[in-house]
Image 1 (cartoon, helix red, strand yellow):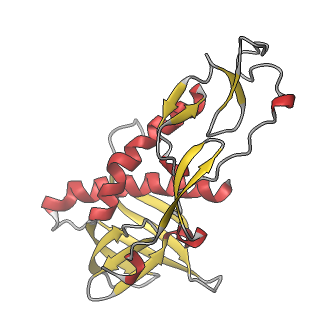
Image 2 (tube, rainbow, N blue to C red; image 1 turned 90 degrees about the vertical axis):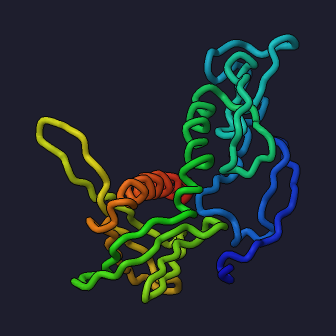
Length: 232
């Protein structure tokens, strides 16, 4: 196991939203994670922020663990897993946030494993015309992208600035497209210098072509989550 993948300690913490299993070091947290939102103060929400039902002794208020807004039980009744905030158990969320969290479940249940298992690509650095066959995978702690061939790259996911998926098969009238590669730009730690790598699924990797396309789709989703975490 690479030093970049060494298991880091975690601790169990309790917040108003529930129990969370978080890294002991903030620097070790996943780049796809989200911070817990501040709750809207009770005194600022006399009514449900979805249906406008007035709160009283019978109609109690509940806070969505994902957005922090205040709702009645009817509008905030679903308990859904929220791994991006490291909750141990499913937590109460409003209908809108629950839908988002349920869609993210595919990434954590399936696509994250695809990224960690890796796929093979031709990788071209910068403006070079020379490509190298490399196995590309996400580290077990989700913080690094490893590229292994004759050369070796360790790219910090938090330093990735752009992920552009390359496709083919598009027609003006519409039609199926498939992912055939990716352009990835990232910053070198301690520098503002941007570097670029081009990933291409090789034609001679017929048995792995579907795997490469699946890996690229997972990387596309990972990039969306990365941008969301960064913009929070």
